[in-house]
Length: 132
Image (cartoon, rainbow, N blue to C red; front, side):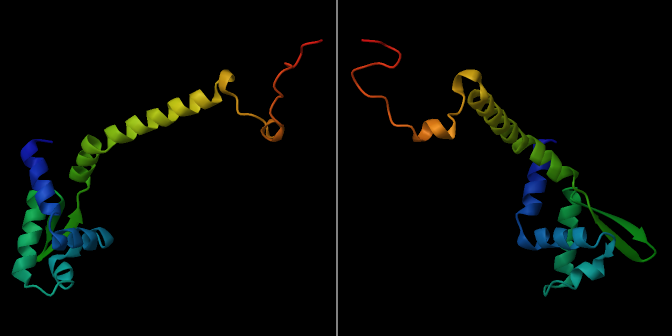
């Protein structure tokens, strides 16, 4: 994804009404522009401007069926941003957790059993296993 395309996606997602439009279309794939417009108190022209921005960013696609324009969410740009910005962090922390798991489960770091957790500490002076 080019920096310009990524900027367009972030700009499109920056407005609450556009995020709401995406939610509406995601919940009702193939809904008409009129159906989506009914959820807003703003003018239909304002909704059209938001839809245009979402389409330019690649977040919405539409198809003309007769005189009706059907709307669909395109999740690819959001997935691309996720892959670039989130996946690296997820991989890093997953590797950290895996390293921790291996360290805890290694033979030298066996977890103590419950009996040894409640045993009194060894007495000072005589060492266990030594004879007088």
